[in-house]
Structure formats: C-alpha cells, structure tokens
Length: 384
Image 1 (cartoon, rainbow, N blue to C red):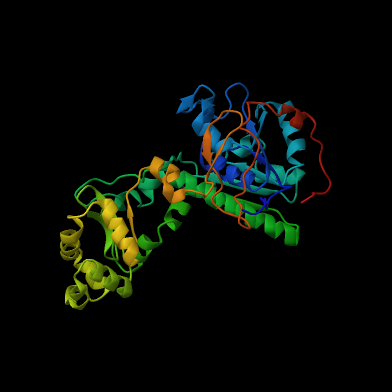
Image 2 (cartoon, rainbow, N blue to C red):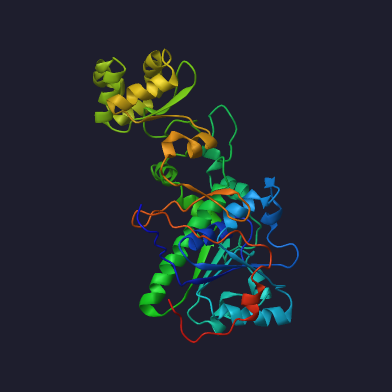
C-alpha cells in the first residue's frame, strides 16, 4: 500500500452535530485529515456517548462515529461561551450542524451569524426536510424518512408488510452527501474565495438514493415490494441451494447464456419466455423453477464455486461478521482499532493513491480539548 494521503489536511471543522448523520459526515472529514472539533454540551455531551452497545471502555457506537475528533464542552446558551465560540469559529473553515431548523438562529449560530465573523465559512446544515418549506420544523428520524421517502413501501416481500432497510440508511446517506457538499464547497472556496451554506435534507437525499424506483415511477408505475429480486431485471435474486440461499445476479443476455450453460440448460436462451431481460423479468417465477431445479441439489459453497468458475456473478448471503472478518475482505485493511477504547471500527471506504486515509487520534473524552477553545483567536488568513 502507498503512503497515506489525507486530502483535507489543514481544514478545521466546528462540529455541532449529534448522534448519527452529522457525526458520520464529520468522521469522513476527519479520516481525510480535517481537524474536527466536536462541540458538546457540558456534563452529558453527545447523546451517542450514552447509546449502546457498551464495553468497559464506553460506547462502541460513539467510537465508530467520533474517533479522530477533538471534544470541546460549551454551553451554547451561555453568553460568555457563545463569544468564545465565535472567536473559535473564526479560525475554522467549516461548520456542521444538525439542529432542527430555527434552533441555530436562536442560539446565535446560524449561517448568517457565523458568516459575520468568518465571511468565507462553509456551513452545512443537516435536517429532515431542509431549512425552508412547510415541513422544515418537523422532527425526523431515520425510520420516519425511510417511510416518507417510499423506500419502506418498496422494501420487503409482496406478501409481507413494508420494512425498513437493516441500517439507518437515511442518516448515513445524509452524512455522506453532507461530506460531499462540504468538500465541493471547499473546492469552490479555493477557486473563488466564497463560502457557502450547504442544506442537506434527509428526505431529499433518500429520494435521490432510489434511481431504480424513480425510473419505475417515471414510466408510469408504482414501485412495489418484490423481495430479494431486482424489480426490473432477472435472474437477479436469491435462489435455494440444498443448505441455504445463493445470490445470482445476471443483467444481460451474454451472462444469461453463461448461466444457462452452467445450469446444463443451454436451450433456455432460445425460450421465448427468456429471450430478453424484460421477458425474463416478466417470467421470473418460471425462470426460478428452471434455476432451482439445478441449485437445490447443490450446497451454497458448491454453487459459488461452480458459478465462479463459469464467470456468472454470484454470492452467498453473509452476516456482518462474515463480511468484515471473513476471506472476502482479507487484505483490504477495512478496520482499525481505537487506541483509547480498544474498539474496532470501520475505516474510510475510499482509497487515495492506493491507501485508506484514517485519522490516528483516539476517540475523545468529553471536554478533553477545552483549552483549544480558550486559546482561540480570530485568524486573518487561512492556511488551506
């Protein structure tokens, strides 16, 4: 692996966000070398410090989202602390917040307030429904956004009820888009000298994360629950082996020919029910019968070996531990261990020049870096 390169080295971030979407965004920035100061309320700190699961060194959830950051305690409603914060923010390049719209203004920490002391600030606001509009001040949690975005209604099996995706995907996706927005705004500032207010509505993000459903809707249909199969392509599903499920993912005619030959049924390519991808999708259950006649007599391990040898895309269905700790990710250096807590966490998913950027700072104790706030003085130029 090449030497680690952190593309945001020299960028300073004041992070007022809590729990998940905002902290996920700023963890991405910290891994890329940004100096992230987590601003927390005294005594209690971020709620995620108190969310399980726990070990004897604290919350593994908090570690995964806040390793590599510094912590400053500040009572946001205290006038003296507020004045110190403005002095500190004048030394920063980025502010990230996920207050409900209107709260930052009440605290004197809105984009306009910050721009008065740091004209070229990049300011990111993450909320459920954006900073304006009739829904702006509604509270929003991940499950609420999954439900309102249509994602929940199209997830699950047709005979079952709608179900949430098995992760807080709306929060995480909003964090990714916030980090993207901050990074592009920093590039814009480098070229023009102008700051920007980045508004990241979780609902808008979750809608943008559904291009297939958007295409189905644009064609005049309503996306529906179809279980594990792909809604517009086949065979693209889980199929029964003798001891479990195997994924087969075939999305073009050439690969279907490969699969048909591997099943010992080359004539399937000439069957009018399966002539095109659309035909295969329309006749998915007939195709399933043909496939499972073969797969049901082999174990999942045998099937994966057979399909790998043929070049047909496939996989077993792994649990998270098997995915992270198993042979499929061996040598990828996907995880790191926090030096303070001993908690294992996932590293940045993007490699830069062959290396995976990772902050080396341990997860912070609450208020560990208060001295940085007291020492802050407005800067007249940025080093970045």
